[in-house]
Image (cartoon, rainbow, N blue to C red):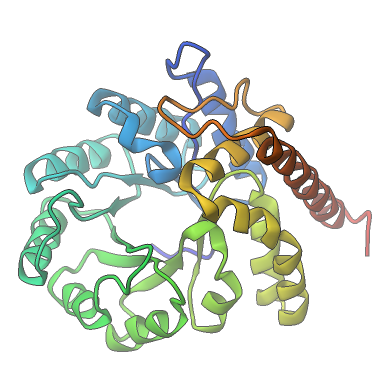
Length: 308
């Protein structure tokens, strides 16, 4: 399995009573594919997985795979608090046709490296489809590159590492080098380090779903041998990304607000509790939505041949 491009983490749409809006979920999958997604992923942090019950996590995964209909690969995030429950979810994901698993290690009781390696060895050994390590350490250096490379030697189906750490470019290059190319690397954190990632050999990004075609265009410009144009478009989108990084759920609200404006979601609601921002932040988000929509319109115009 090879990936190149943007993999949006699909947001979980909620009705006003906080039940899951499956119709909007299906529409969002269609939208992401139409906007140029290389694959789609759920239920991750961007899906509020931590507010979903286990049956809900299984259900939204099923809906995503069904709606994608093999048009693009599907990545299901199955990490849970134990080896047992992670294997259960991972086997279920494989049984419904997922193409890849994204596995976050246990976070409530962090593991030492020896136990961390055992965790991934057992999960990888329980399925036959590719597995992605979600290396999410928002203020530190995450799992050492040497450990990820060693895991790729021990686990033949460990194919990806998703980096969500500060300044990940150097680590990306080390992972690719030390794994001898066995691991493909994606960047998270709303794609803020996207250009650095591409320069260091990353195969793409996982980002929120609001501006999928913009992220896809940044990568395609790089692949066309136009790195300065790629950076220029990224820099124009960065105010949107920077706001998303101020607080996870502020970013989720912004992406949902953008999708609502685009007619993809009926509501921007998150499940409680979430930060109810002051009016000044709401106005800032409205401005960022306008910025994002203008960039999306521009990118779609280029794709349609309407602009130079």
